[in-house]
Image (cartoon, rainbow, N blue to C red; front, side):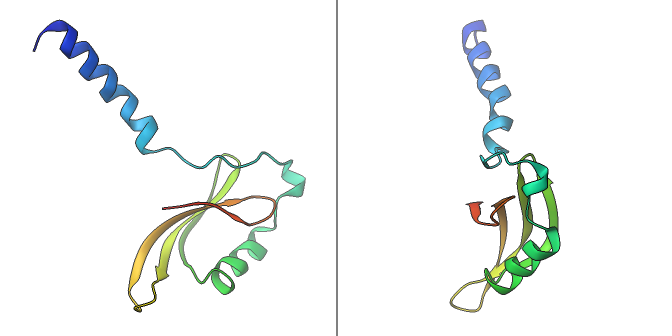
Length: 93
């Protein structure tokens, strides 16, 4: 590998984690306006139908790792970001 190719390769490799691990772009709200965690967790389970394995704050979002059941009854892993003020889904993987 020549020097120019190596430089491009390593530059692309260095940028990879920021792309792969990119979170969601949640709207910034004052912490005093954020939805109560327990209220959001109830909504996540009762309205969205997700099971929560891990709940955390990621920058300006609430985030969960968990499962959802598809229309065939099969569980699949999910990662979901929620707007901290409204509880609306911002991004789902």
